[in-house]
Length: 233
Length: 233
DNA sequence: CATTTGTGTTAATGTAAGGTTAAATGATAA
DNA sequence: TTATCATTTAACCTTACATTAACACAAATG
View 1 (tube, rainbow over the protein chains, first blue to last red):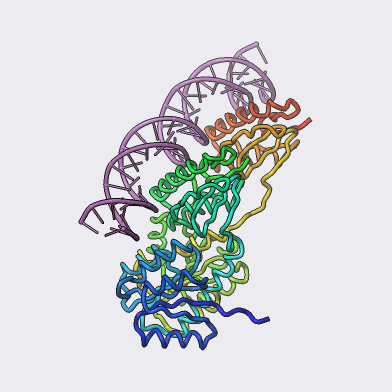
View 2: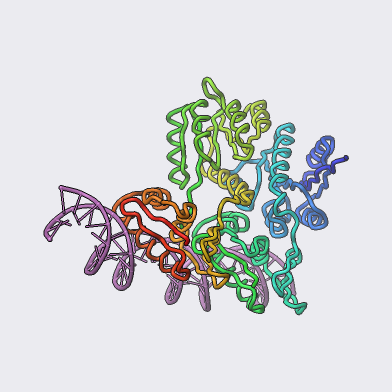
């Protein structure tokens, strides 16, 4: 059977470099969509599902980091690789903070790039088996649409959820009636596990509990030192 | 929160560099095991479970790549990061071929290293799906759910258990009707065997007895100087 | 049977984790 | 810019937990 080529979103403002890279990747059996700037990159990202995003850091109007953050709000899982001309330490750190999977300095060796792309896509492929594409949940009387970020009770008015509220509730729903470990949410959603992110998470748990009060059969229980449990009685 | 530190296997033959790196990592809350060569590294790898392996490429007798291959044969999942003094393209490619997760050139910035380690370990954290071990027990009229830490009598309201109560009852249940030696619980749960931990354990036995009173067929008997016995009549 | 050693039980204490609310900061859109 | 919303940080409080102390009693020992 024909296996679908992997799809790459390439966002690079330098037309020469961008075109060369695109062609090279396509020669190596990737489907590549090339956006010339951050804005266009985000538009194209929203319109399709990608296996990997390659973002130039230095672009006019919207730099790679800003774009990465927007992408992360829509999708916590898609691998992101940054391209940068100069390897400034602050940049690298910033990149990893927004959830970069790798970092490449221009000029880079094309074979090395291919290798890395392969490694990263493979990595994700194995991960994505478990919690693949599940975006709609029934939670007692609630419907959660995690793609459009709203929660509806008994077909009533939808409650809009913020990105963090949404991700957190989705993770809880994925583990309904079971333990959702603190650490999982912190590493997946906050990408860091320290005192403050932990407190931030507690704040969001409180917000979700407030929403879920509408249905007294639904509640979020705490398991001291372990995590939370979304139960439906 | 008593979350176990992440465990790193560091294989580095240069004693100075190795020790400095080990200390730095330990200062940042990682548990580090330092092996001085490839052979030793593989021995240590087999003896324990690690969250990450950091391998020097150039080592006498057994280089980092060979070691990585051996490690991959035992374990396809553990993240591997290579350290190398010079960034030779062939080396990098070879590294990715044996399944490297990242590559670092010496000298590298320590903050960047930390960031990468964090990113890599977090990536893997999400994969950890479920270890379907023995978590559910029937004890007379009781159901013990050791993962969610509750005890339920005859389908009634669940009684929440503290971590120590839970582990202790679980150990007793694993030896139902049989002797559960004091020493076993002390070393497994308290990780220490002295007067105070021993008294602490007695306190927990008392707590469990209180819970188990609901079913007069279930009791915890003491075997003087030996341990306890969870019996169901 | 007196002494030592082990266990039963309750209560007091100290610390860590979680709950809640509000203010501060950051980011985005009008 | 202001206005608005999302998120983090701070403060304060409550609850959960483990340990330790204290005293009682039981079992073993010689």
